[in-house]
Length: 254
Image 1 (cartoon, rainbow, N blue to C red):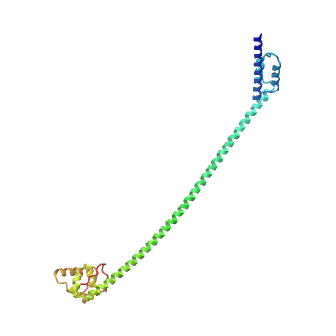
Image 2 (image 1 turned 90 degrees about the vertical axis):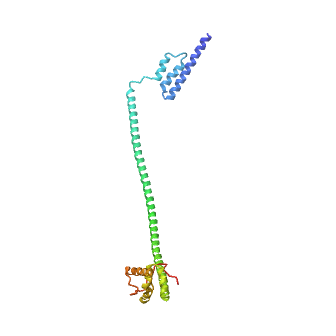
Image 3 (image 1 turned 120 degrees about the vertical axis):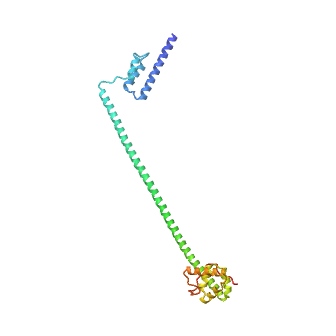
């Protein structure tokens, strides 16, 4: 008897636990309504195992749809499907609009970036052009100053040569003709021709007359030939004034 009582108690506890779990499941899933609550209370009030317990539990979990409510349920399902489709379509439209807006913003951002780079390049080009013009102006100024310096240097050098030539010519006019002839033998033929051309014809003829030996005659003949080749009148016949000799031709006093 004791074992039978324990068994019945265990069955009753299991039934209670099953019903409590059923109530919790229905409440959690939103399926607990007044009809199901009434059935569960009846099952709890009935002592022992309720008749057709499994059938009643199955009815609670899967109630047969009423014939009159099938059409409204179908309408509700259709409306829900249509609503979901409409929401999906609106979501697609919104997403496409967002993509277009994003693409336009990205394009505008890239355009502004390229325009800024173009402005920077133009400013750099302007700076380079300005520096190039400045360098060209400085080079032109340097070229002008160099030409002016060369002109002044050439004038000073010519003046110095003229002064040196004049001093040497004065000296040759003061020396004896033989001394002048000895000095001329140590000079280039074109330099000697320049001095002879600058002398008085009589003075030049006397100096030429001092060249008597064969070598001396050959030297003075070469001098006179250079004078004629250069289109210069013969020193013996005419004088057209002093002509500057090449640099370094100043003679030493004998």
